[in-house]
Image: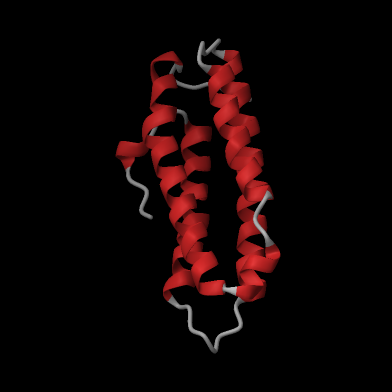
Length: 137
């Protein structure tokens, strides 16, 4: 997953946080690419998933505060999308990772990469016209 300026929303805080989300997703991709049946990477998978969960919550909170400050009319729907993604992360079954790491990691990676990319490129682009040059928290 590669960040580029076409994904920027024009807010320094949000853009930096989006870049961090892309970085965490890239860590998952790297783990998947380096996966082997003999490599015990369970702890690393869990570490990255926890990192993704915590950072995502931090980002969503900051983004929602900014959108509230600019009276973004789509905020309620935007929050619901955020809540669904957090719920997905919270429902990841540790047992599934232990049972079939390869398939579970593949499924997680596909969902996370797709969600982050489509959310940033699609959903987040809806609030760009409402952002002034910079909104500080």
